[in-house]
Image (cartoon, rainbow, N blue to C red; front, side):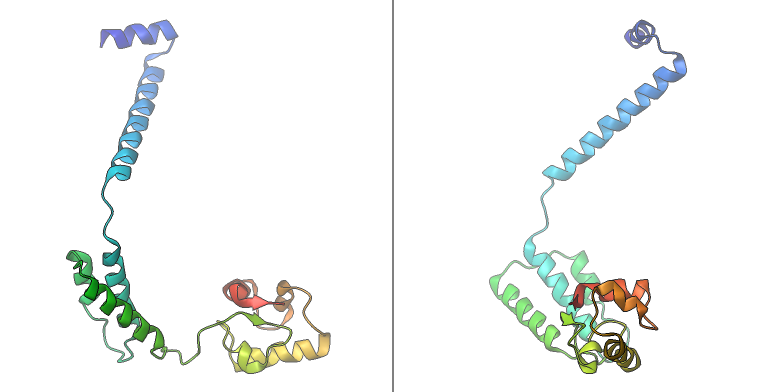
Length: 172
């Protein structure tokens, strides 16, 4: 510790400044060690994620209205099997889950041209119901086509937050 005191006096630091510098250096060293350990740790197998995704998709597709099944939590606690047949079964389950009807009864959103879309097509967008779709079509009829996506906020009922939720699916 005497060498540390000599270094501190040679640099011209006070006791408080020296303690602060030592704390910063220890924190930097600890962060470097943590990054090294994270980079060298073995990742989980890819089929583990596929199994967990399939279990969550099945839980999301469950339309019984009851509590979600316990299976996804069990998958996270136990290691996943590594057979090819299991991966094929998981892929099949994901396809079935994607084909299952959604709880909202609304079809999934797709890219929509707001200048040519009908009321039914506009209702596929998130946060758009029949009344708001009718107001969009009416606004388009009276004011002409939209010049920008941001112009949608001029329609009564569409604010900045609603526009942000719809933006990925809006086209001109």
